[in-house]
Length: 332
Length: 276
Ligand SMILES: Nc1ncnc2c1ncn2[C@@H]1O[C@H](COP(=O)(O)OP(=O)(O)OP(=O)(O)O)[C@@H](O)[C@H]1O
Ligand SMILES: [Mg+2]
Image 1 (cartoon, rainbow over the protein chains, first blue to last red):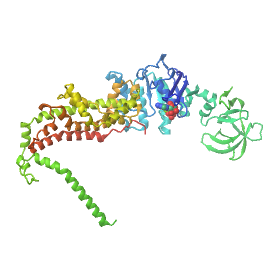
Image 2: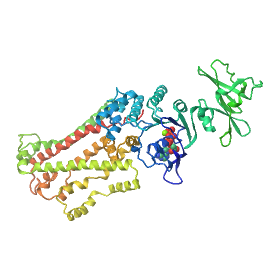
Image 3: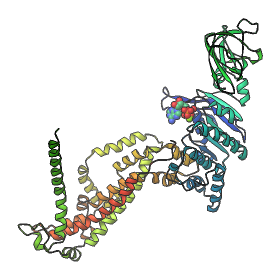
């Protein structure tokens, strides 16, 4: 996508700039994740790629071809909708066969293609059921199977796991990554969950307010955020942003900070300890430094500071990212 | 409230309902009785409330002296083609108004809706003139074509289709379906409940149509059942026996249609494709 913009609304004064001058490059075979908070324009971006919306400006290119004026059905992409959008009056089999029949694939081929796809997503025992007779996870799989069955150039997935419970989500996330590895098809995956983005993405695009905040590999986004939005969005818990008193913010990952005695030479500044969460494999110490709430990550057997006590925070300089407090931009 | 008082009220309600039921059933009973009684019994005074002799003479008379077969064929042909045709056309228009984007969609729709405020009777005379000028009276054309689109039907279908998630249609579009295929394979099947209801009303309305046929048909072979039966009432005498026999026959298709469609009305597809 090159410089794509899209606004909703009829009048010139009342509109929503859903997508604002976005350029994204997804290479063939990649799993790219678009991540951002609710309402930032993720769905709109996918709909633009799928051809369900027309961009107001910019170009959309698939496989070297500019597709701005190409209809959805001729773009050869498949989409998994946020609400699955299975055809309620058709069996699972017919749901999956619909796209093939629409494209006049021979009947004998349809049957084997549907069965192969059903096998891949594990719904071959459910082929005669109607969508309303399926569980959420099964509907999810059928939606994936329906997208897969005609081997499109790319899959577009809009928060496919968002309405499933945490366990199922974690399992399907792994299955999706596995599926992507096996098929090798380009995927554009939309989510508002940064964990999902970090575990799935070959590359991640962070969006906010319809604009690209930063794009890169999960590692690059984590280690090297471009602005405070990305710093505060990626990571769980996210980067701590502590004002240094000179119009800058010090960005420190929770694991980049150590607890030391407040009077020791290593202490860079003081903090007042709050509660500690014991998560088994780690401890999260809540504290407040320079009137800013922060979270520190400690190994499971370290002794956390007493709630209410004052302690010192130590960190090494290379671990700090500095941001301009006014613009939120990284200072390099 | 004391229990005697409650019982008294209950009894009162029961009596009222039984009276009401008797009042509504009696005309049907009378029709049945008259249809199967000889002519002499039907005009007897004081009337016989219970059958004395039962006979099929009235039916035989209908088939030998009146063209009831022809009337039935006319009624059925017109009602069936209007029902089928108008369902298709109203569904297409309703779908367009519900889901397609085109300039001035709302304006056009409201203009159509405003037509509902014009009483049909007002348009009858102008229509009569137009039909006559076009030499169309006494043809099937004038009996069928004017009813192939109805604002009310379009409105009903539009309201129903608006509740379909757009994502379904978009999924089909991405799946490679043409607009016509989407209409046929997604929209029509999902609209079954509203089509069933509208179809029943249209059919019954057409079957009972009297005024339109009276105005626009003149020849004997262009009568429908209702007009045909009305012709059994002469200026000085009415053949009650055959009239009621005919009315009984005329009720059969309506009852059949009603029960056939009732199942599809009740079944009502629930939209189960969404999460949750
Ligand atoms: N059809 C529409 N008409 C008007 N405004 C719209 C329309 N669709 C989306 N918007 C607006 O555009 C912006 C982006 O919406 P979009 O659906 O792309 O967000 P999203 O990132 O997918 O959010 P979510 O995570 O909640 O699904 C929002 O402010 C939304 O209100
Ligand atoms: Mg969305």
